[in-house]
Length: 447
Picture 1 (tube, rainbow, N blue to C red):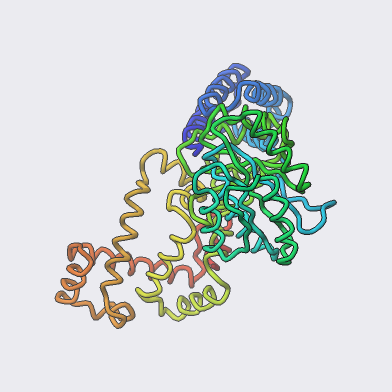
Picture 2 (picture 1 turned 90 degrees about the horizontal axis):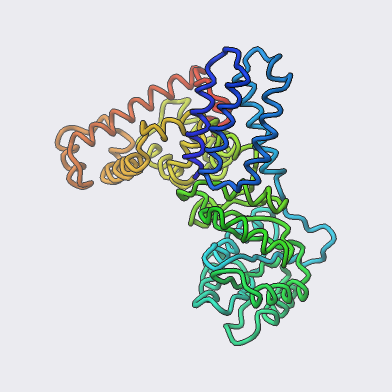
C-alpha cells in the first residue's frame, strides 16, 4: 500500500534538486505533480484541494525563501501537512462509561469486522484488560461460527445465540453475560451489508441505543478506494462513529482511503489491520505512516515489532552468545523464525529508511527473499543438532546428505554456510562497537 504514492512523491522531491534555490515556478510544477499523485492514490478531490492549498501557501512563504535548503524545507512542509491531514492519533476512550465498557464494530460486509473483533480482543488483553466477544451478526452465513472459532483460538470468552434471536436482544443479553463473567470490555460484532441501506442503519441505531457503547468503531477496507469516503460519511452521519479501523493496508491499495476518510469525517483513525494473521494489528501513528509514505522508513514500529518477537531473556542470551563468539546455526535458524513472526519481509524492509525506494525500483524482490528464507530453514533443519552447533564438521559427504534432505543443490548449502560466516563477521564488528549509521539501529540490535 502507498507504493505508487510514495514513488510519485519521491520523484517530485528529486525534481526539486539538491541544495539549489527553487523558484515560484518550481513550486507550482511540484504542486501539480503532488496533486496528480494524490488523485491517482484515490484521495478525495476536496481533501486534495485543501492539502495542496495549505502546502502551496507555506511553500511560497517566507519560511521557504529564508531556508538554506529550500527543497528540504518543502519536503518538511509536505510531511507536516500530511501529518495534519491524517490527524492526531486516536486512542480508545472509556471515560464516562461504566464496566463493562462496550465497543461496537460497524462496517460493510467483507470489511473484516469479525477478524478485527478478535484482533482487538488480543490487543486489549495485552493492555491488561479482560475482553469479551459478542456474535451479533445473524445475517452473514457462518458469521457466528467464525467468531466462536476465533474466540476459542485466542482463548477469549464469548456469547452467541445463533441466528434466531434479534441482534439487538443478542447484544443486550451478551453484555449481561459479560458482566457475570467479570469482563471489563465487550466487543460487539455487528452485521454488515453489501451497501448502506435503511434497514442496516436502523438496526445499528437500535443496538447503539440499547448498549450505550463507549466506542463505535467503523471497520473499513483500505482497498475500497474513493467509495470508502462515502461509506465513512454514511456511517458517521447515521450511527455516530467515534473512530476508524483500516483493514488490509498490506494489500496493493493505492492508500487514498486512509487519508480521505480521516479528513472527510473528522474522526480519528485508531487502528490498522496490517495482515490477515491475528497479530497483524497495530495502533495508528500518523507520523509513522507519513514517514513511510514519504519513503523515510519507520524505525520505531520496527523496534516495537522486534520487542514483541524477542523477550528480554532471549535478547540477553543472544547477546552473551555474540560476545563470546558462540552464535550457531541453530541460533541463526531461531532468529529467522522470529523475524518471520514480525510480519512479511516486504513490511519489515519498508520500515527501514531507504529500503522502500529500493523495493519500488525492483532492487529487492520480496517474493525471492521469502523463498530464500524458506530454503535456508529447510537446509538448517536437515542438519543434525551437532552439525548446527559445529558447522566446521560439514564435509562434502555431509553437505551432500543435507542437500538431498532439503531438496536443494550442494552449492545452496555452501551459500548458506557462507552467509552464516558473513553474519559472524558482522557480529564481530558489532562486538567492537561498529554499528551502521541508521537512526534507532543501536536499540534494535540490542534486541
